Amino acid sequence: MDNRSKILLCALELFSDKGYDAVGIQEIVDKSEISKPTMYHYFGNKQGLLDALLKEYFDRLFCKLKDVIVYQGDLPLTLYRIVMTYFNFSKENPQFYRMQLSMIYSPKKSLIAESVTTMNTYQYKIIEDLFISASQDHGNMKGRHCIYASTFLGMINTYIGLFLDDSLELNEECIYKAVHQFMHGIYS
Amino acid sequence: MDNRSKILLCALELFSDKGYDAVGIQEIVDKSEISKPTMYHYFGNKQGLLDALLKEYFDRLFCKLKDVIVYQGDLPLTLYRIVMTYFNFSKENPQFYRMQLSMIYSPKKSLIAESVTTMNTYQYKIIEDLFISASQDHGNMKGRHCIYASTFLGMINTYIGLFLDDSLELNEECIYKAVHQFMHGIYS
DNA sequence: ATATCTATATACCAAATGGTATATTAGTTA
DNA sequence: TAACTAATATACCATTTGGTATATAGATAT
Image 1 (cartoon, rainbow over the protein chains, first blue to last red):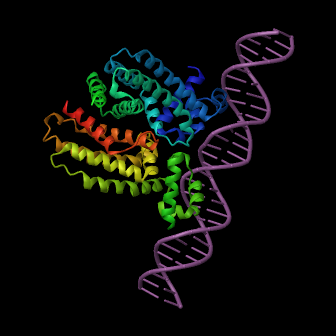
Image 2 (cartoon, rainbow over the protein chains, first blue to last red):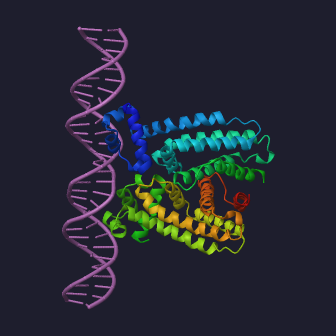
Image 3 (cartoon, rainbow over the protein chains, first blue to last red):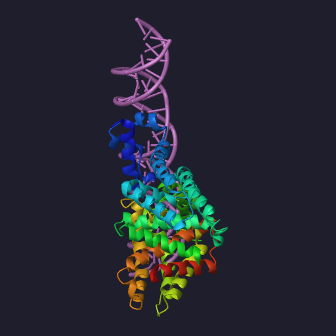
């Protein structure tokens, strides 16, 4: 494996284990068995490393989400596929999702927030657009797409958080129930 | 105001603004306009300060929760009161709730987690006990109290997160809808 | 063949980190 | 009054922090 990938991998492990701010550059380069200037060569600074890490993984998720979010009149089906995509992604990249979860509510003035907010806003926007499309078929959804997008993502993250703590199995029944419950909130 | 309270207040402000790990002791004592040994006199070390801060505020929340969680056969009503309690608490202590939210998913090996987990487990336990009581009246709830407690708390935190970002107003309609949607997940 | 560029290392830096040794003041108790 | 305790300050500490100046090996392009 090339040094760049080695650094990214070790950084992910350390960040997800101890938190971004609690991990020093020295620790990362020691674990990666490379030297500090190599790290600075590839990523510029600590935040650059985090940016690269977030981009690396989120791009994969966004790619899969785009394939799945094609509204064709059946909202529950589309939501089902979205939840499935998130669940699979978190199963394939548990360490990354752990880290990402820990950063969602990071203080606004923190350096983390700068990097993470972009990604979360993008996620949110994709989902929001879906609800806007769907509201053409569901009159009672109008004007509520912001809340739907946020709470839907919130619900997904709650479930994944439980899964990552080994408190819940993310199976099809779980997805079905989640979507069903969410849809009920829209209809009623 | 006495020095101890001054330190707690400044620490809360800084932690919620920048995150626990990103704030140094020096910064806290500068802002509090006290000296380092005074801080160490009261709290022992940085983690002791966080512990005291968490205890200070969570005790107030737990106190109010205990008054409200008295199951007498009407689960929706009790849930409504719980949500109301959380919402009011987050309105009264937005900075604290912000900080607490940012710590919920903190990495397990981090120092933060040690302090926060106790509080979150306790919260969880109170709610779980309620669902256990209620499952005597609702047969289809049996064995699912863990999931109910977790997702119920997750839902509450999602809403409060939106409120703290000025994306949502926490009014009675909001509580009603949240509880209604949650109950639907139980009945069906 | 020479110049350039990428990737890497050694050795270094000022500043900040969490924490403490020692001393002093003020109030309380014997 | 003497002894003790709680609360505070000055000055200090070793370690770690994020980051860099300089140098070098190897590949590539002119």
